Image (cartoon, rainbow, N blue to C red; front, side):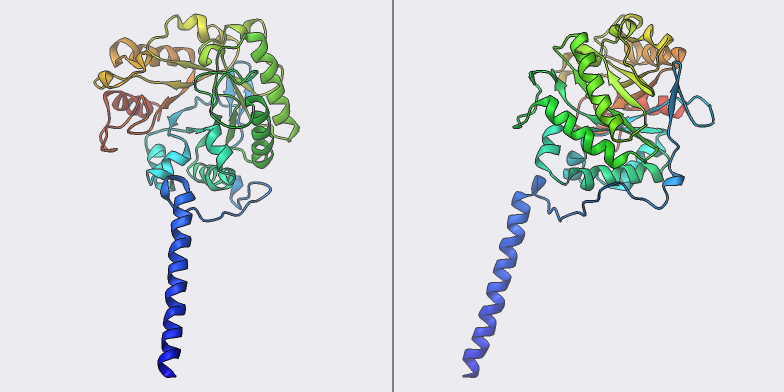
Length: 352
């Protein structure tokens, strides 16, 4: 009789253990990159008791970005991969963002890939909420970059995500949720659409205005960044059709293949605030890339470009603060810098 009771208890423990293991396996299998993803609390709005200690909200006056004191601030910073990618590399933590701070950066551009946001329903709370907290505590600004590439109007483009929702509909949904959540957070900046492509300036202006209206309807007053057409390179249209509204900054993405800087963004910066939210080059590792437009070096592109931006008073964000996404700032070991990375670190230190 005692033997049967012991056997029964043993079997109960064994079955419970097996079920627990199966549950953990299922969690890992269905989680991102095989990592266990525990539920996160979903709040209605961003909450932090030390919000007053975060960097103050910036505003636009003329062609300058200003602090509440009226002092001009030149945003210069770095761009890591999507937080989902950081998580897969065990880099999604405050220590990683401290490294960005120590570089001399005062802004971080966070790319939110639509497919990651679509499939991870907790993305806002799991990733964006802690990023904003860490940046605020480290006295840095955060650009939330909705990382679409293509035509927002008809959802076309070779880099459009494979998801069951149209680009425009999803973009408006995203900004309604994100702007409402962060509307009281002073160190947040919104970049509405990473790289408009294969779209006319007229179509883009119309769609950008609709996105901005959606953000403002949530009560968010922070700076909004609007990129140029042709993969955010071309801001020429701003001369004839500037976006209506307050606190609007224009973004351009410039790589070694792009010349005639005055034409695409420099002349616009004489009247409107401009920020370069992507730039970079591949030098000693140029033979490893299929992205030919990245091939360049410090002498023919990097230094002349930074000198030009300094002369114009234009801020910038360099990508990627990573060891694999191109152009990468780090070597494979994620410790030593590429030639490009060393140049970026030098440029950031000169800003301190």
